[in-house]
Each structure stands twice: as structure tokens, then as C-alpha cells.
Length: 378
Ligand code: IPM
Ligand code: MG
Image 1 (cartoon, protein in one colour):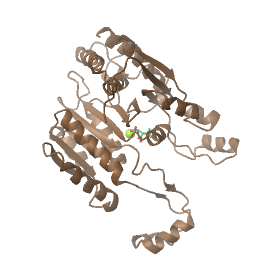
Image 2 (cartoon, rainbow, N blue to C red; image 1 turned 90 degrees about the vertical axis):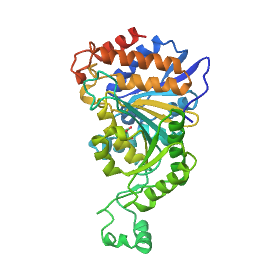
Image 3 (cartoon, rainbow, N blue to C red; image 1 turned 45 degrees about the vertical axis):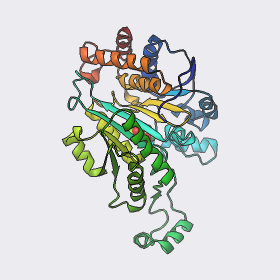
Image 4 (spheres, rainbow, N blue to C red; image 1 turned 180 degrees about the vertical axis):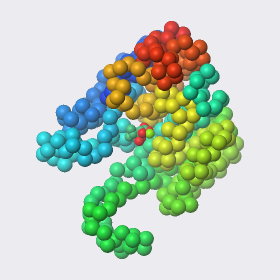
């Protein structure tokens, strides 16, 4: 389901998060205000600050807020690797074994936002376009795979014992001490794979797209990627009007660069989708243009693909277009397609005109100036 029923008014959770997340959401509000969406934007706490002060980057009050809104706009969060000095400090302070897990990953799993939709379009006149007329759409499975969170370091002896018993290739590791290796489980379900692959084919049909490419590594990762590919072949039978295509994840990174016009809709398990969506975003101007929707049946959370860029925080320098386009995606999802189109047209016009540009596009306009210029054109 990639679209909701239009309503008279909406409740939207407004989650700026950390670093430049705050600035790009401030810019996006300028544009949203201009299309006069009848919506209450409700602030929610999220991010590194709450990890440090409360031991939870996604506090329960924010989870409760998400249960009661139509959609959410999310800026960015700082996700640091585990075992930073700062985290150890927090663990010591709290006296309990807390492990930092990225709040956006948790939101995706908690609310079953199984579709990560990442359109990558080269808007005419963008000096950062790799090539003109690129129009790719990435469907990334958003809750499973190597993001399942089933990870061990050190590896419990029970797991070593059972793997030694049931897996031949595991003998290469079985003599290691439990702290000499780590295990991250890649878990893919038939149901999860089917949902994302169906979503991709449905989207292709609805938007008159010709081809869906399944991205995998089933020649090596036989169990999980094999399952994903098998499910895809089954699902594709219901869409004879759409070309079924498949590619290994390594090869497709080369082919995408060589000839992006060969591709249309791409669908991938979580981690490959994460990687290829950055590649596709770079072809249409980089992270300042990568917009993203985390979409479930009831809730959807929209965000720029980029992170919190701590080094630019507070400078109002970064490009807000990714977030403004994410807001456009949110309007589409809410069924507010006319307002969505207004935002996209105005954004495209500002890009094409080339007078107001942030530093990444060779200009010196601020984050908010871009938003004001887009708002002016609505
Ligand atoms: C993304 C990001 C996230 C991810 C990070 C911030 C956890 O890279 O949305 O693509 O890995 O999914
Ligand atoms: Mg990513």
C-alpha cells in the first residue's frame, strides 16, 4: 500500500533529531506551510541527546506519538558505532547493559514500515547530475535481512555448539575462542520478501514502469538471497505486463553506472537496498537529493537519505531539497497529490533556474534561502 485516503486534516509527527536534521526540517516547514496542508505538526523527541540523557534515543513518548499520527517527518540522527567511550559512560551511569540501536531502524521494525521507497530522479539543470534523464526507483526491504539485530559478539557457547553440530562450513571457526569472532544473522522471511517485491511490482504497474530488477547475491548467499529470488519469480508471474529482471548486487553497481537507463524499478533486501540507494542518489546529485519513505500499512515516516552531518550542524549550509522532496512523498502518500505536485514543480524550477543554490551545487545560499525560493514558486 503506497497511498492513504485523503482526509480533511492530518496529524504529523515532526521529528527533527540531531545535527542538520533540525535545519532541514525547519526549511521543509517553510515549503509545507506554503501549500497550506491542514495539518498539526507535533514535535517528537528522538536522537543522540536522548540516548545520553535517558538511555533511549527513541523514548517511549515518541513511540506513543507515532501510534497516533497519520505520518511522520524525520530529519536525521547520529548513529554511532557501539562501544564508543561516550556509550560506555552512559552504560556505567545507568548501571545496565544498554546497547545503542539506531532509532530509525527501530521505528522501521516497530511499526512494520516494510517498504523503503527511494526515488532517484535527475532534475534538469542540476549541475550535480551524473547523467540527464535518470529516473530510478529503489524499493528496499526495510525490516529484515542483516538489519534483524540478531548479533553476537562474543558468540555464546550454546550457539557455537549447535553450529558445530549442524553446519559443515562452521568447522572453519569452531576452534576459535568465543570472543575471537562475531556473528550477525541475515534473516529473510518469505512473507517479508513477498511484501516488498509485490509493492515494487504494484508500483511499477500503477506508474507505468516497464521493468522491475531484483537485486541479490543468490549465487553465494544461497539460503536467504535464494529465498528472495525464488519469491520474486513467483510474484512476477502475476505481472506479465512488467519485465522481470534480476542482477547480482556487485554487478549491478557497475551496470548502473555504465547505463542507468537500462533500469527502472529496483527491489532489494535491506542491506543491498541501503547500498544501491546511495549509489543511485549520487547519480542524481548526491545526498542533498536523496529522499526516502519508510512505509507501512498504517504509518509512514519520511526522511532525507542523508545523516546528521555533525560537522555542518548549526551552519544552515546543507541542501534541504532531499527533505523537501521527502515531504512531497509524504503528501503523495497522504493522497494529497496536487499539493505534492506543487512542491515538486517548484523544486524543479529552482533547480533549473540555478540562481539559488547551496554549496554542494556550487552556490552560497543557505538552507532556509532554498526553502524560501521554493516556497515563492508555489
Ligand atoms: C539509511 C541509513 C540508515 C540505514 C542508518 C542511518 C541506520 O543509512 O537510511 O539508508 O542504514 O538504514
Ligand atoms: Mg543508507
